[in-house]
Figure 1 (tube, helix red, strand yellow):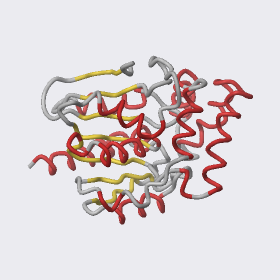
Figure 2: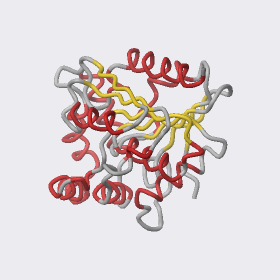
Figure 3: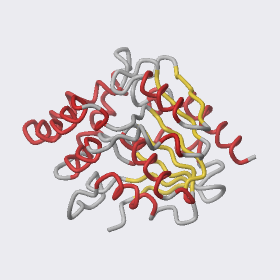
Length: 252
């Protein structure tokens, strides 16, 4: 079943936006006005999230990439935050003709890179089942921004997470991350790439983004001062400026 999408704008090369494991299409609200001035923007609710139907079975990372590919038959720039960035990486690896450029935000090579990462990711679904969406979001949401983030932003992130995550969709997403290590994939991707990370990201962290940028053949790294994990939400003006400048360069 086709995922639910929010589509804005009509002109220019499309931009596909893939949210993090605790997000939804609304996670990109701070980007819509700026990006739709020159692009058609497609932001999804991933399968099993928010307004998208639950998958019949666990899609795996390749399944999520295939679902994303179905939304951009003519190709697009792809912006992925955290888990969305891992999906975007797989999309570029398995559907290269559809990806004009990659923007990976607070992303990772996958939680399967280490036994500890794999175990921690798989444990999240049990936490969601035990706590319920509201309490789960109340505990995890504040970690996505820096400690000094305004209360209004924290509340917005927590509320969006509580309304978006559910089982089995979150468990399927966590399993896809636990099964993924893109360490040996990145070097084969020839697409232009921008890696963005907040300098106060404590979820994946700047070091992981540095490693991704170093492994990609045609990438550069942008570090946003004062931003936590969801840099696009905490520093939207700077994020929009940096990413739109990159897209203009790619299209020259």
